Image 1 (cartoon, rainbow, N blue to C red):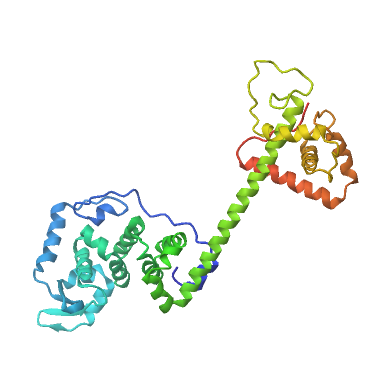
Image 2: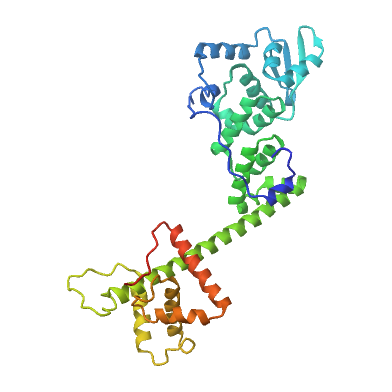
Length: 375
């Protein structure tokens, strides 16, 4: 999210996660060898003996000509030629530093001494200790960004994405991802916060962000509200689709009852075979009492009886879905078709919208639309 204001987080839906580059990853946990674990192009032909040689050069500091001062008086030894080639920032620092005897002295502060030691070791052999990496991965992300070590930066992002994000460190990681121009990691942190907002908002990291970056806190809160609204809207649409699907299934069952006859309710104009299997229309059971009531109700007016009113609505809905009212056996289908021309335009539009939504929902569900022709 480099170049974007913190407030933009609350106004946007997080984009999809960009894919990691390169082929599938291979894992060599016994050494923590980064170049064999990261997704890279081509092949890695560096032998174990060569990596051990660079490890030895770093560990022993043979003819080291650079002293790196760290927190609490710590010292890490290095070689100017290696550090300068590995990092343009370190190269610039070494050029500006005067030599004291045979060595130059630079400082890397603001992170623990152990993190600096892991960082410099990585510049020599691209190796790391898995436990140390797990402990100092956030510090290494900062160092890799500040000293422009792209492959270490990508690796730190990947490590955090692969399970190192926790309730306690996600806020700090989110802020660092924004500052260190790590858009993929910032998106993942943002989603993690939205998913676990109640727990994250109770952490010390959240309280610190609240004090130091109130604009960012406001942006995250806005995105939480928007996410909740999206979830509510999603649930509303799912419930709406469920109702439309139930209405369509009721229409199918209605045609089945009056065209084929149903063992649940009884035949329309034919005798059912004794060996006829059970009805596979689930809505028939729900319609049974409604149809029987409608057939025997003395009021049977749209406004006089609630059950009859529902039946009238189902019959009218069927007439809008029916493809051939002249041959349809569902009661009153043709009558509703004829009455449609005298209806008010506004009411007719409502029925058309309902029909369109029902048919669209049926199509989305993946099943073929049932023909309402009741011949």
